[in-house]
Length: 183
Ligand SMILES: CC(C)(COP(=O)(O)OP(=O)(O)OC[C@H]1O[C@@H](n2cnc3c(N)ncnc32)[C@H](O)[C@@H]1OP(=O)(O)O)[C@@H](O)C(=O)NCCC(=O)NCCS
Image (cartoon, rainbow, N blue to C red):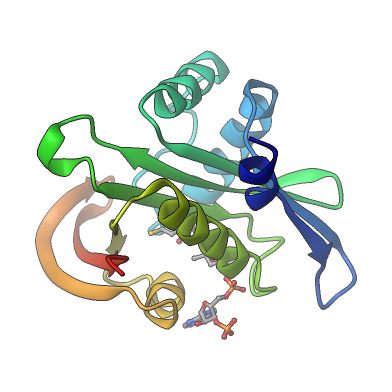
């Protein structure tokens, strides 16, 4: 148990001198996570979310469901403030139990510092440790930064789903990507 928690806890200092900590999320993070998602949603065109659509209670419930289904919620803290989140969701059905679905956001005040990469690396290490053999994600085809990060970690493109998400300003194509961890 201690080893597993140590695997999920990473800390350090960014290139611009800010302290960061990656750790498992707790229910107490819910208000800050809702604010973070609203902030990123309000940038527009990055994630399939609308500001204000999720309450703190819904966030708490969603975190505990995710953990109950064997998933991983990570929180990124920068200089004492919640600045990022990574979720790996599991599917309960037998024939999909080898897959982890990844979602990640980093606050625009903490991007470009290597923290998204550290979050993803933590998730990949955890996935290997718990026997997940495929990490999967979906990203808007226009999100070059995120696609660049995923490619650099070894994620491969599996295909594009056209007009698969409908945002307020119109439909978006999504790129499905996966990282295989069989060996
Ligand atoms: C995508 C996101 C998680 C990346 O996090 P980040 O902390 O900014 O990323 P990092 O600083 O770790 O950068 C990692 C890699 O991203 C890629 N990258 C960064 N900026 C890029 C850019 N402008 N264009 C292309 N690739 C870029 C590079 O491969 C970089 O690798 P490097 O470390 O060798 O330079 C973050 O930008 C974010 O949360 N964006 C808004 C929400 C979002 O798009 N979520 C993903 C939805 S699928």
